[in-house]
Length: 337
Image 1 (cartoon, rainbow, N blue to C red):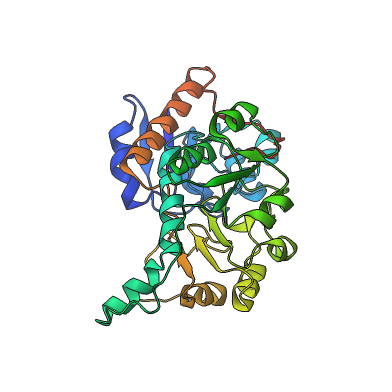
Image 2: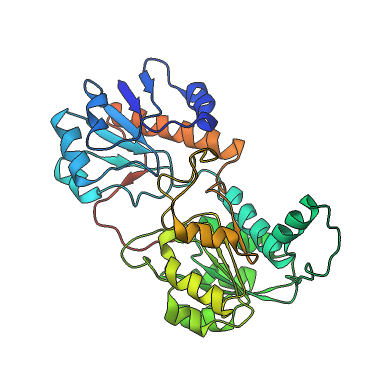
């Protein structure tokens, strides 16, 4: 089986090569998938893509013309793939649904602590040799109410990590888990009640039509004056303009973001010399009460190894006409990440 990998980053190349299945012919490329670059996959049986690739209907039409038989994304989220277009051309799409939930959960907890204890400002001051702490008086997490939006594998992992922090947990999910609620003593409620009663709100759900801009101005207005928002899910779950406005007015006390609504073409790349033109991102980066990491929550050795292994497993199962368990259906409802 001949496979073409688009958007291969330096940080994942070693694991992809390490997990490659014997007998597969694999081409690794740094080129992003677009309707124009789809031609590079001519003569291959399947392609692998990343989260910033353009797997739109127009691209899939080109892939169909070149007789591409399957698509495997090296991620859990697949909001950049037009599943309906792929299904129309009978091209199965696979993802990696479970590579290391704890990696993302740990990063979420790290962001909570960094924001609560003003770690960003601390580092800024120390770089100028200012070791005073007048601006660094933070808050403990202990005793707070944490709102977890999405109690899938990542949400559950975060709940487990928080069990030692003496917190009260509110949760929201379209499919509440009664056993989790009983075992971990959490309380499922509506998104409105969660936002109104949580000190910290952490997002762990996929992006689709229902979750797009789920956290918007009306919900932010319900939040406590000291509320913090953590997002390690997908950027567009938060309305960025509404977030900036509410941060400026002080309605939202702070935000920690590992994902950003307009990150495509920015995150995963070095812009030290060419800079960035995104004014929203510049505004967020300049705020003392905003912590941003470049979509790195998943980036552990354990995650990268599992992602590469499952990606090749998906191709292997397709080639052998076996079910991998990771095929994405065209019609999808909102589920927990």
